[in-house]
Structures are given as C-alpha cells and as structure tokens.
Image (cartoon, rainbow, N blue to C red; front, top):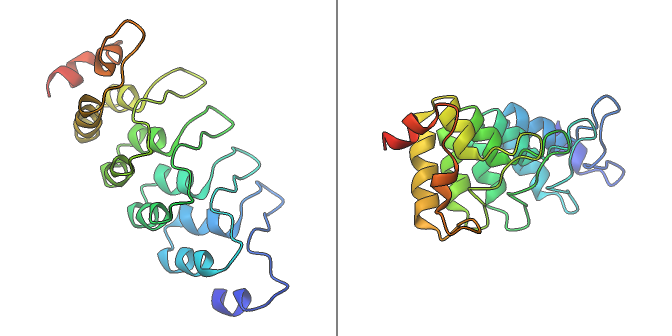
Length: 178
C-alpha cells in the first residue's frame, strides 16, 4: 500500500497529521517498521529531520526513544540526518532518549556516528546521556558512554574530563564500578 501511494505525484510524504504533527516517517520509525522507513527514504524530497509539532522530535528521536535499533541504523546510514537534534519539549537528543530508556542497541550505533555528541545535556534538567543512564542504572549504556567520553578530549573550562562532571545523586557508584 505504501509503495502504491508513494508512486503518486500528488502524495506528499512530508504531510503531517493534525493531532501531533507526525509525518509518515515519524510514525514508521516510532513503530519500528523498517520496510516502510526504507520505502519513504527512497522517495525524493522526504525530510529526514522534520520534527513533529507536539514534541519537536524527529524520526530518529522517536526510533531511539522506543529502542528501534534497526530503524536507527537505517536513518544513521544517511549522512543528511542530524543525530544531535534536540526536541523542543526538554531539549533531549536521540542519544539522551536512548540512554534514559536503556536501549544499548540504539546507543551503540549512535555513538559510532562521529558527529554524535556524547556529552550534550538536555535543556530542561541540564543532564547528559551518561547521567540519565547512570541514574536509571543502565549499566551497559553507562559503560558505552564512559568509553566514548574517555576516548574523546571533551573537557569543561576547568580542564576536568567530562566523566568527572557526571556523578551526583548516587549515580557515581554506577560510573565508578566501570
């Protein structure tokens, strides 16, 4: 059915619904429908980073939040997707959403993308992906994030390495156990 619709010139694959402003690509990504995602990406003019109007989340954000690892890999296969897009509600990136929910199968491909900032905090709470993962005791995600941050040269103005900024509210135990 999707193939048939996409063959029509009068069908706009970027047209959003009126309830939340979700596009077909957002809905397919959120639900993990890899075949539909691939079909939509095959259509010229599909906006990979078009956010919904309710939360300001892109297809990559929705896939990351719901643990749709295969969809995340498909979307990251496109160089024109923005892996650091922060939503308008809290300023959460796809990496934050994946780390918060403990989706290590999503965190891994996101961290493999060089442009992904592993230490970008959200705007609402000022928390990093590492902090969210540690506070929710997602040990494998904490390990992956710590390794990526330790491998980078990210530091604050005081010269401290980024992992030293993450611990607080009891999450230092999870980080130090690595």
